[in-house]
Image 1: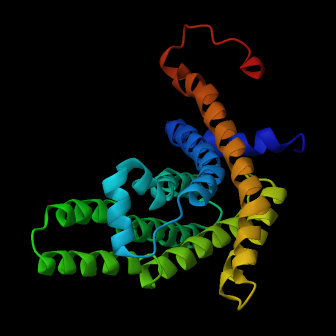
Image 2 (image 1 turned 45 degrees about the vertical axis):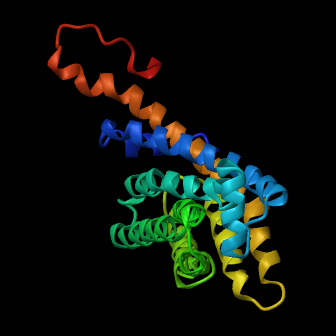
Length: 260
């Protein structure tokens, strides 16, 4: 980081110190998201997502916690945690390019909402309980069909909309970072590389490998760098607060402003 970086960052926070909580929450959310990446991989290796409704129902009846984890519960949580992340990006970068940041934030939040409504973990839990209580073959067949339809959401339009809008939002944000004094150029270029590779998912034969490469190491490192910047912004907001309130106490000694 260059010697002028703290001053550049402080220009943003002195505008309004009330954003410090959002920055700190976003930084903590990003760290949890990064932690959940390897956890989700381990869960998938131990308990792969069932491909049929019947397999899902049987797993729910054996162990509800394991079944929820196999249905990507941690992925649902990480996407919920992305909400403060997108809001923090908007606040930090809105002065650089307001219109593009509004588009990127909207796209990112839509991607979150889509995946939260499309992931069938709790729908399958409900249907599993109904299947266990069913007394006729007709009822069980109807519940299996409903469960299979829910599973299809993992691979259908909702999933692709979520994936494309999410990658597009982060790509736009990363390009805006290049014009910003808040995030480093290294952070911006890593974000661009990670999210360009994310679109490689749609390349025949090698798409899945490009998608994995986008996460490890590029997106993971990018998220850690973003978390660090958010915590810096949060700390500097906290330091700026007493200085903003000082005019209302003209007879109170404020100390050396350079030592704050």
